[in-house]
Length: 218
Image 1 (tube, rainbow, N blue to C red):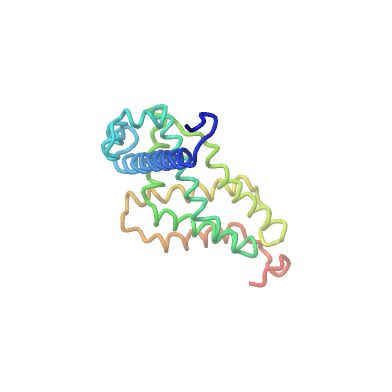
Image 2 (cartoon, rainbow, N blue to C red; image 1 turned 90 degrees about the vertical axis):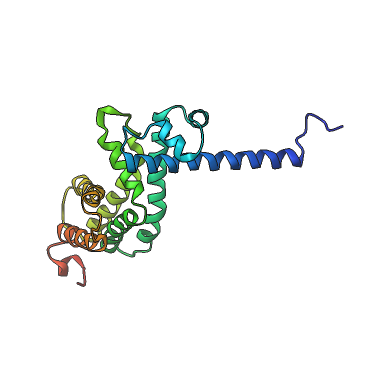
């Protein structure tokens, strides 16, 4: 007889399988929520609509999430984390603040091009205003902190002029967050050209006015 005080290898295997299934189901529901919110808007993306897309009942969603507010919070956290994983390696490859800023902006637009449903969902959630729950804005902080570090690095290295870093970081982020709105109005928008224009804009806005004094060879 197997002792109740010990967990067998079979128990571990079964627990692992159940954990995998539950994680996969949660991920599926989050992806279906992103699809529904991006396509229908926040108000119309009900739990019933999300459940229909996931091929489950609303009760299954309620098993994994404590209501729509909880699900929206998970959607936002997922979108920003996937974005971080997409963008961060390209920024970390850069050797100076100027090219890091360029890479950050370009990668931000490339992420929108690669996964347009993700920023569309965040845009629709944010537009809901008082009509719906707002997600925890702390999920946005890594992106803001990333721009802040790069801008500070550039000023310390003499590559960037003197400016208010929080204002500049906020302006860059606002410019990037406007891209999904333009994409809704212009589905054929050339995002590559858009990214290049943003890079040029913020390069001119941040660069030291006297490259010879700043040590910028260009």
